[in-house]
Image (tube, rainbow, N blue to C red; front, side, top):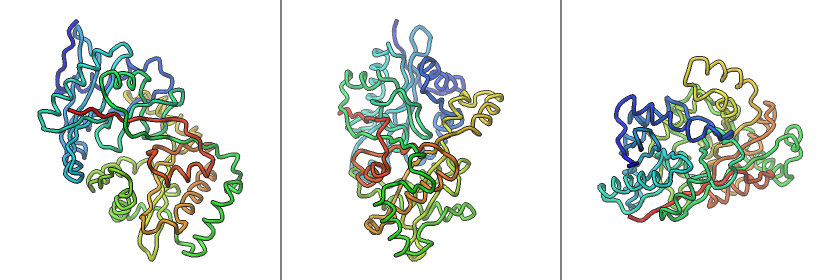
Length: 378
């Protein structure tokens, strides 16, 4: 039967786009559904991305039945800042026997990208480079932690068969907390030594908890630190303040101030570290919060969360070597242990980010999930 692609326009289209994932992952015990409000914001084009980029979404059908979903986008701000000409694909889902469907969807994404004069298609990203980057290539047996994507093994295979070249890789680390002892006394001695030296040199207020009462001011401070800290990475593009604010606002209901730490020098924020309760443990049992009773299931499961997720350590390069990164990591680890979490996910970080990878390995973390991005010249 012929494969047809149609743009997602109506509410019925949007719901079909969202629901299709349940067909793809119905036998996958590791999958965690996306939340409908988050997906709908993109499909409605009200997500912050659309203030500086453009995108479109398609449903693939065969015999009248939905058999795949895909989106394509151009991040105009990123292209201007890097002098590149790139489009992205994302929101990609297809059935395990659907290679022909995948080809049809990528054909449409390539056509859409060429119409906008770009030179290559990269992905998956949904749609910013920080969201759902890469297809999973290792660790399928583990459920994803919060803000981490999941995909079947066939997606990477399909991309290679289509002609995409493998690109940047991202990894997630897992660390068991109990072996480190109370207050992390059994964490590497070098980490304790570096942190103690930093605390002695920079004072007791070198690291503080985030001030939620100063939300707007804190976001501006951390946006500046984020862009400065990651500027040293290859291909990094400063994130727009609107996107940073949008991502922070989405996280605000999840934040525990004790797990959001800010390093400061002379009263100025120069770094931050963020941990979150691993709400995916609860969301996995809450069916994407599609129905009213799912909220009760989520509330019950939330009280039994066992893990925390370390999402980012950002430090202005001007302050590398001061020990502030070690101090933030140690203090965050202690806070996680005090709250009774038994394990920590650290995700995701590029394999080209030596600072974060080195710290994760010092704590005894092991890679348990790996993602790979793909690129195709147009």
